[in-house]
Amino acid sequence: MVANGKSITRTYIGSEQHEVCELPDLIGVQLDSYERFLQLDRFKKGLAPDPSYGLEEVFLTTFPIDSPNGEMRLTYKGYTIDYENIKFSETECKKKGRTYSVPIKVTISLEFSTGEIREKEIFFGDIPMMTDRGTFIINGAERVVVSQIHRSPGVIFSDDKDVYSSRIIPYRGSWLEFEIDDKKHLIYTKIDRKKKILGTLFLRAIGFDTREKILEQFYTGERVELVDEQELKAGLENRYLYKDVWAEVEGEKRKVLRAGDMLHAHEIDELIGLSVGEVHLLNLKGENTLHSDMILNCFELEDAKFTSEGYDEPTKEDVLSPIFSVLMPGEMIAIERAEKDLPDMFFSSRRYDLGSVGRYKFNKKFSTDLDDEQDEETSTDLTVLTPEDIVNTMAFLIKVFIREENVDDIDHLGNRRIRSVGELLQNALKSAFARMERIAKERMNLESGSVKPQDLISIKPIVAAIKEFFGSSQLSQFMDQVNPLAELTHKRRLNALGPGGLSRDRAGFEVRDVHYTHYGRICP
Image (tube, rainbow, N blue to C red):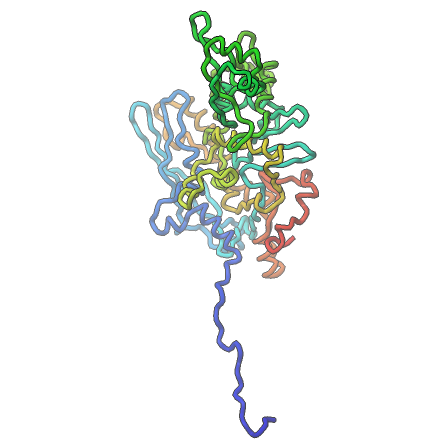
């Protein structure tokens, strides 16, 4: 009933619907990842595939393949996907028990040392196509490749069981770990979880071959004039030298004291007597220097264990022999080969890869090359380690030990990363292409001058890798089709198992537990 007979206009609140935000594509992760791998859209637009990721990157990292005698070279020219001539539709594949796939053809040229070139388009097998629902049809059954959550490449600092350590985790290649002996105040290196190697020995093996070069990486120095005054001499006692001291002795220039040696009163008098005008002393206090004598302790152990008699520093043989006796126990060590092999383990793109994510995390951790957005993009191009990365890691670990920096939380989502279907398949194919490369090199040794590109290339490892990945991998699963919501949940699921991930036996409570960073991001 309306008072005084007045009518009231009814207002419909919310009658006009405004779109607040665009709904996300809930299976976009799967679709985008596989598109990034095959780059089908670029082919449809007539563009060349991007060489920095996907199948194109696998080809470019494998080729060219050179014969051992240098007479032949296989070169990759490009691949094509015959997407217009798919043999069976999705419905036919389900009815007939077939795989919904597309043929891939690769153009390979064989170049001879004589200058002759033979080019051929080679069939490289069928690769499964993803449906617009984010699934694959393998032998008539619809399957989903679940995304993998794994430890992100980069560097991590931890203090498990009161042992301070750091791990450099690559995308591909050898693991490098550093560990501190808190009783003796020494720093050690481990390669691929093998026995410990003294940290300064490892630095010498990668190019910092003198005490001076090593000290320059960790400490700052100051120049001090030597004057025959008691107060000044007392201030110099028990300080460490930053650089070698040279003097004229019996008519020739000799090294009288080494960088890293401690100055004593009688040595100061001797230097003044030899007319040494100045010395460079090491700073253990102040800015931009390491506030620890751990590197100097390592020098003392070098002198006691690893320096040949008659030398004031370890020789190449003194450095490389203990390292390679750990890496390859029982084998004869050729110093020339060892000198090249060790840097190649970490500084060669064929054997080591941090990935753009690993490089970004390194730069962020040590605040290098991140002045602006442009630097941030270009600085991720270098995906191998540098000697400076190793020095920064060792220095940061020592700072963690002396409580100047904090350890990382390994279970934090910031230290985890998602590998989706495209990246997982790319990794599976990389190992298959490595086998194909070995077979090609063996055939190059046996074949004569009448050989063709197709005679050298074996696609069996590639076909087998694709079948194994989609057919029997832990991450390739029959799709949950109970209802549409179960189907969607399955496509968005994360799994820590699979290649490069955890195994059921090794997964402890900490990994299985719900971390506070999961709230609002991952449903347990």
